[in-house]
Image 1 (cartoon, one colour):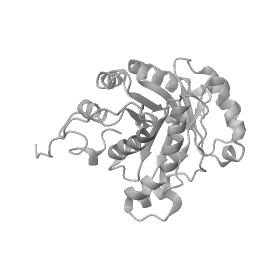
Image 2 (cartoon, rainbow, N blue to C red):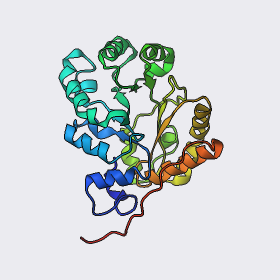
Image 3 (spheres, rainbow, N blue to C red):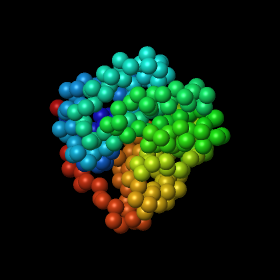
Image 4 (tube, rainbow, N blue to C red):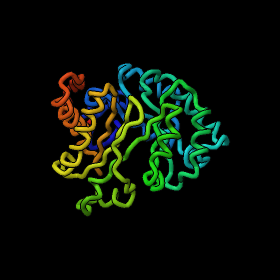
Length: 273
């Protein structure tokens, strides 16, 4: 995520290496979604460079590989890609805040026993967070909550209600309209480490208006002694680091004791070479 092209020369140095871009990103935000690990497992050498460019307090929420969650659907037959993934991420150490188990929309409440069996096979080294997209889980939320409780696993809400509140008005919104799931709003936390994914709009004022409920919820979680992680998206993500800092500032206005985000390093102007 930290290699997004529109960020270069604005939030990230340009030109720069991948390692330099991650270091710069870590100056803006203290957590990142590891969405790319869904498509390809990085080498162990690559994750070692990620560790070298970030403080131990930096949070990686890494998505399990597609062969594990979507192709083998958590079955034991997916043991080899899972083993390779777990081996690859070891150099990150405590930076792995949670492993993100995003399940396909076809994974239904009837498949919960497969999820529980999978969670039993996972190493206790990591925390786990599950994202489901089947309506049945939202119709009877107690089923998944009860299934995750013995493992201390979190249920990740993906809030797309603001995005789908109005028709798309840009190319990025039109593309996202066909790809993003229409998920019911859910704001409950199961553990002391809730994780939220929020999708706003390309217009900043609409995005900010839509996240106000999460400012309140996040502040309440902090008062309860929880340690939430919030990921903010827009269809084009062009302003995401700046928006993340704005959200953090709004929460900090309610919870002054919240630790500040790091100070970004100055980014020079774009160059031709």
